[in-house]
Image (cartoon, rainbow, N blue to C red; front, side, top):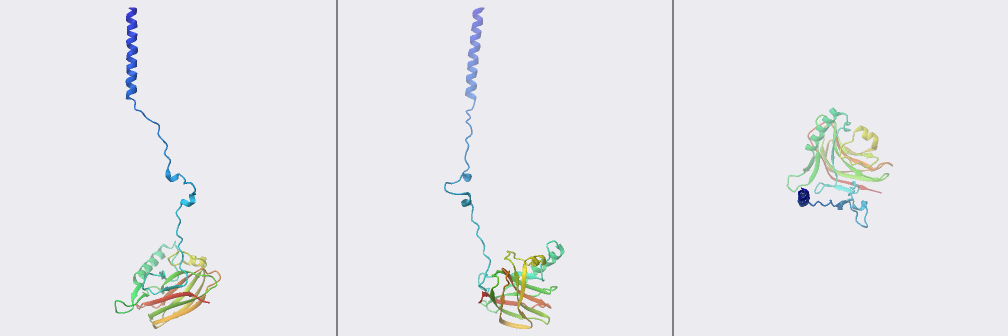
Length: 248
């Protein structure tokens, strides 16, 4: 009986050792995860964070001397103008009507041929809109305070009685990248003056018009304004060969 008990104990120990070995064979060999550095966040020796940031190209505003003859790439940006001011942002009804006028003016204005031949001269034309006493186009230009400038342009128009057309200047205290007519509140905040340059009536056939003006002490931007006011008709106002130069 004693020998039988010892034999059973030895058999039990052998079975346990065999099972433990099998379990080790079936257990996968898992290595600890390696930490990988993010190369995008790893600084390069001899550089700083500022040097890695892309440099933004600074857009320069248009400044005199400027000329535009509409024959090639545009030199002046002309934006539509309807009425004296754009309605305020909270005037939803007024803005809706104003945008309708602006859309109509944009579709009926632009480069036109002034002759019958295919190689004829290109100019820019715009016309009155029913329901509006004043329409036009304007170009934002950066200028220097207290400086004298000369404006030249060729104008062709055949205006009905009670209508006028011409060129004017609106002065502002800083150059604002706004390609849209100013509201009255914006004008009160930034406009520092205005000057009427040329005013025409009746019929004018491709005549060069010119005038001089001096910017005020706070003027850093002007809107060079081409306008058509008064009684409506369907005859276009045609402008060409625009030039703006500083003079002594």
